[in-house]
Image 1: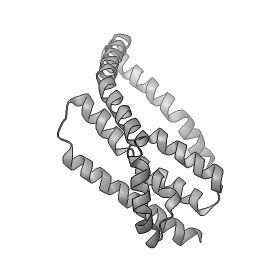
Image 2: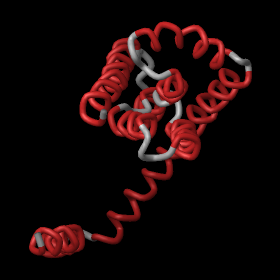
Image 3: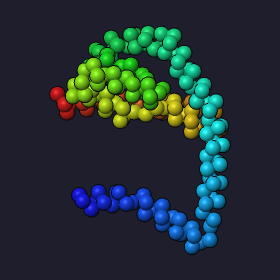
Image 4: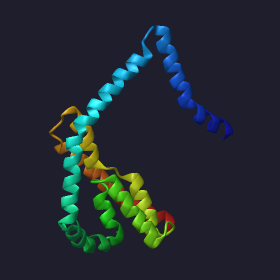
Length: 176
């Protein structure tokens, strides 16, 4: 275990050093290349700002309009019937939309029910087994100009639903 720990601590610095050394040997202007890459990164970040603003506004409208609470209330009788706690349903709905919003909901669940409760386990597992699908589609697809996201969004949401259901089942099987 000690060797793996030391290897993991030194892996990235050694790899960076080897890349710089190899570039120097090949005659590549390392600093100039780095600056060019940083310029491209900045331009990409500027291109993403309108997509991020649009997504954040849509999330705010969705949440503040009460639609989020209505959907949660409509789905909770169905999910409770199949054994999914209604307390984690808002988290499952928020996770594909916003990672920070989902993290805030997870924190609230932890503070209310405790990290060692079944809801805490499910919320933690759900955080690790699902992704921020809409954020990913907005940022990555927006940065390269992909506008037709129908199939990617469908697959991403199916994967999120599978991750949510698996989180509930695995936690209930292993931790009860």
